[in-house]
Image (cartoon, protein in one colour):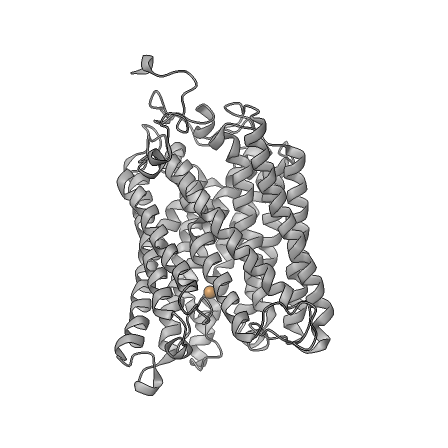
Length: 535
Ligand code: CU1
């Protein structure tokens, strides 16, 4: 009944009260629930990171400066929480559950996802898992590292069972979200929205969902087996009982390598949207990028052994895993080529979301190339378990995923909340995040090459200078994120109304008001062209 609605009604103000949020079935409101939760966990995981870097400011316990964590055990616990929170509670749900939930239906011309109740249930399941993870903090904590490697995770006196069950529950949420998105893409596309007309962000979320559904159950079973090993002593991973600790690594990485692409593919999807919008061009090589997403998803299942070159696996296995790992570089390079080709001769505007997109391209190439180095069998022996690995995966996870998430948030904030933010502040946050990131993590490549092992809370004095630079960088990057938070909060305070399409972008979400109404489209859109039809 259009007459009953005021013209200013949108998905935020159409229902009032906190309860209306916790019982909502609207994909956009559920996205906001995820946004608030993930933001909170990001702050907690970020504080843990700052504590770790502060500890590493000075080489050893005899110097008081920087020695804020009282012993190695505390350091191991903070390290584990930092990793587990950032992986399971921030980066895996981050882009799909926040931006995927909000924009996937809008991108394909749908009123909601296929199963709205399941969507809300996914958030509750996620929060239940997150609360279980937090509960371990008030039990015996956890010190195994986020990978829960056996045999230590069988012996550790900390709350391993609770923590792996927490990851199990959060994995369930991830599976349900993936399932929901796949059905949504297949069943709810608007008339004329063929698979070759969906935005590349949708292709990315779709490919991600395939991995979520196929790989996450393996993690679930692995973690259950670990819990059983601790409780029932079944003898599957514990060598003392005839089990094989390396078997755990096979199972764990069979999920956790594809999980890297659960994190990275949605980031690449955002970058495709940003590059098209801010170059004012139809994306170059649409089909190549779309199929590259599927290609990366497929190859990701056959590379897990690259985590285990030095675990005693056969040389043949090492060579095969090394070769297949390098194949991931092909679809990734195809994406990178097509983004560059799109920018080429485009009328590029360097607004804050585009700065993050370019930042992503720069940092992700470094993350990718160092990945190829690590995939090389003999080189890996040198770099294994050093800070080189830490630097590499932070270039992928932060330089890649978080840069894309920030770019996506700056891009879609006006649509999500209906307000414009200060472009100057947004750019300032980029400067601090981008530079702070490089100051933090580039020295770690050098430290790793010099042989500094990861996961140690003290080190020899030769490593001091580079560690100090890294710690100072961590303050710069934090300052950048604080500016970003302030930018968003200030936008809510100033209430400067955003137009429907502030960037002149061409995908469907920009055709509806900012913020969108509860049912997204008052009239069902009929699609007659591809997603980036610029004149
Ligand atoms: Cu991997």
